[in-house]
View 1 (tube, rainbow, N blue to C red):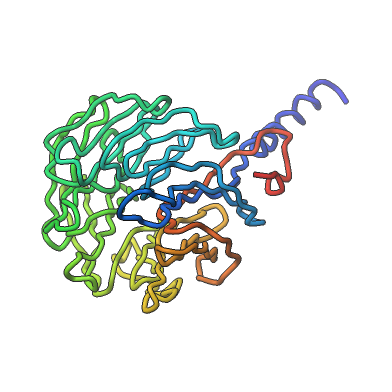
View 2: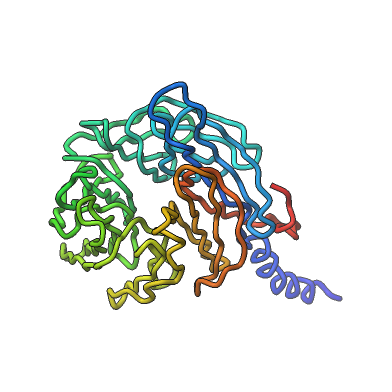
Length: 356
């Protein structure tokens, strides 16, 4: 074979080699268990983080924190960050060794923007409801003032960070804070009105911001989904006459969220509920609820953590039609879940059989 032929062959093969080297997969599923809530010390149950293999379900506890109530999990490269009541920690996603830990208060949701970790705050905090920290060591970069109440989920569009302001469990309307990430300054606050009360989960999709608004304490069978368009400043609230909790995620044009104590899908194009019961209510009449949920958008799976808040629960794994695929045991009050996406290195195969 002459040089020209060899060169042509290499040109044809190289793209396929590159594609193989960039193949994404799901390595594991992280779940944060809040444990049994105890009113007075001495406390005997604490926050744990477990990891499960996405196919075999093999499980192990990789972190234990001497606190109660897990709020959120997020991933920064090979580092997992966990917010749990008064503690913020970071640990390695492969070795599970803790790399940073700090005490903080009123922790709620987490979001990563480059090398910065954004943390939203809630009761008992009364000011500075948004913090920006270094993702590597969790040191404080800045705290933002001017936010009028408890904050929830976040989403990024361009250089702007959008933050849900729900005002806590007794809030009366939903608002969005817009933060310019180039200087981490508050740009403006958007009032979505009383129909967006309970605003919590937030997603950026097709140039718009979508929020899942939890049902208020006093009207448990009334919730909503809001959409805000930054291009023209318009917004709308879609009322849902069922109990609404938090979002699971978006895939394609569908937003999956907890509705009617099960999981429903919402069409982001028609702005209507697509399927009211992708996953049925697991037994709310017997105090069995979906405590958190997430999507595996590579394999079209839904993860729904189910529990009663005082005994160990389980994670139900289904396809997007709601057909059960598998399940595995979890701890008490599994309040946060994270899908650990990876990219297969060149020359490595059979990643689904790698142990966790």
